[in-house]
Length: 209
Image (cartoon, rainbow, N blue to C red; front, side):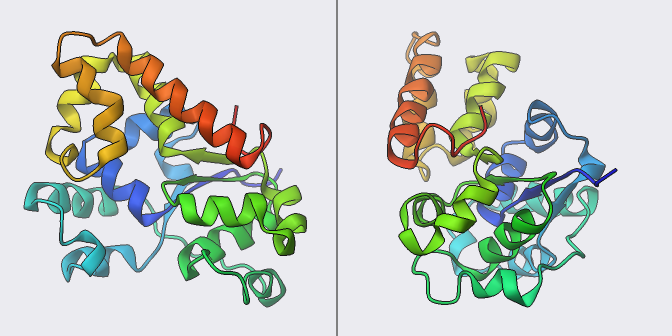
């Protein structure tokens, strides 16, 4: 039987771990923590920290570092042929190329990602139409994970957990802010609206259902 994996990109990992919801999100996606994988470079990037993570408060970085000890690092690698698919593509960085390359070659590997630029490239760039066919239906965007977390834990709890990140993440703030203004029921409507827009942009079959 092929091994199931949930590959988690750096941005999604830090956001979910920083909110203390990483394990919950993994479970909502239908995986065990031991079945999830992160990039080996993430821990180093958090300790530095890399420019992309300097905007986050120390508590978020600390939680993400603690989560690195619980989530195994990725040791698999895609073939050179799979990586070559992204060689002349704008919008897919090296980390996403590794994850997507593995998904091309392993049909039971899924991706949790907050990289909308990479998603748009794979979903709409004609040069990647063959890649799209191989990975479509196995991608969890942050909005989809938020929808599942809101449904399982309640909007007030999710908003409270993401409080240290709200001012830095506009889309997450838009989705969760109704929980802090007396209309928590609007959080689910907000996330569904964002998801509908992504499905229009990327195609109904691109994201996980």
